[in-house]
Image (cartoon, rainbow, N blue to C red; front, side, top):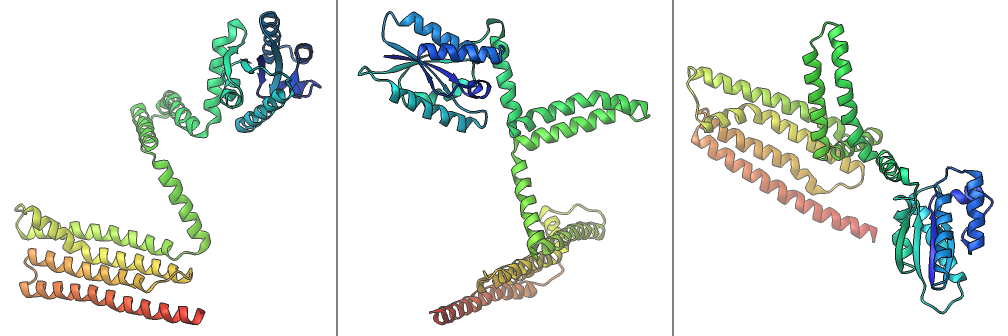
Length: 366
């Protein structure tokens, strides 16, 4: 048995007429088509229903056939597809036949055809018949494609924002020329913005920025100390970078402008910046430790961080000073030993403290 299935995904029939769906039977389908055509002659689903009746009349002399209308809703595509699936189940349950049932799906375009996998999961599909006004077939497909693009926020932003910038370049250049500003600057500025935007979207950096903004917002409202310490640490890093460059320039002047080797250049940058960088690391780690303590997630091993930063900073300071001939070999050896001992001692002390206090806490809890 062949089932001619007319699909009205957005339920124009139910919204514009008094018919309840699903509609089963040739006469009922014809009556529904007439009712919808009377209510809205421009609705393309009218053609779908009359095509279903036409196929029924053409096939009924060759094999057993039935025609039905199933609808979804005018909400989300997922909900509409589910409703169509439920109505297909209702139609199949109403057919009293011992024959195998297959179907021909009749739709009015690409949008309704999104429900085909739902129907195919319930009944074998012999074919799909798309019915649109002949002059409007390409226009209808184009309209649906544009509608889908505009409904998708990500695609909309990717396509329309660069297009908007391109459209604005010429009028902004004219406005700049009227105001006595160089039009080339406007062209260059807007082209640069467009290039940055495309690069930004292409690399997927908007997700990183969104996560960072959300994390910053949560930090502001939850009173996290790290928000302040990270800002201070960033400022210290900038100061450290400037200090490193100043140290490099001072050493070059001491050498009467002679070029330095790559190793001494690196040593000069580290020597001038390492103190500030170490301060930034200690500041940010103390802020993180404070937040962990306030959130009752503190662990003794977290206290290793500032000591590790201090040990690494001391070692880098001694090594860079030695290569700049500002420290002796004995001083370098002493700092290497002190940094190693500081790291080992902090690790051992806080491991013992965590083990002891964790056990005592568990004992009190039990």
